[in-house]
Length: 125
Image (cartoon, rainbow, N blue to C red; front, side):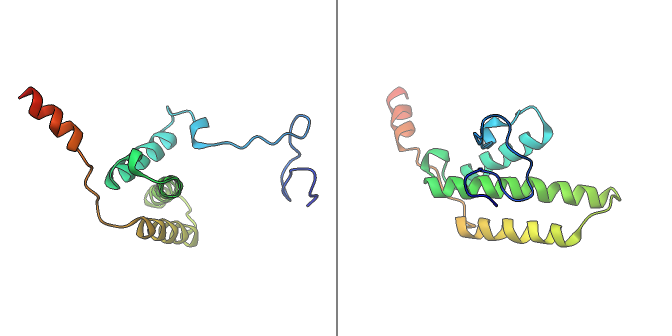
C-alpha cells in the first residue's frame, strides 16, 4: 500500500485527482428496502436508548453499526430460509458482532424524559 495515494490494497484507483470521498449512511437512497431496514432499526435502537437527542457521539456510532449489522443479518437469514446458499460462519459473525454492540449499548430500555411536554400539557388542561 502506498501511503500517499489514499488507496487501500486491492481497491481500484480513486477516480479524479486523488481525492477520496467517503460514503456515509446519509448518502443512501432511503427508498431502497435495505436502507429503510437500516434506518428503521437505527430509529428503534435510538428510541430504546431515550431518543437520538440523548445519545452521545459514541453511542450514535454504535447504534449505526448495530442497525447495519442487523439488516445484514436479516438478509442472510432470509437468503438461508429461501434456500439460497448462505455462509453460516458469516451469519454467525454478524449475529455475534451485533449482539456485542447491543450489549455494549445496554439491553435495558431507557425512558425518554418528557418533563417539558408534561408541563405544556398541564398548562393547556
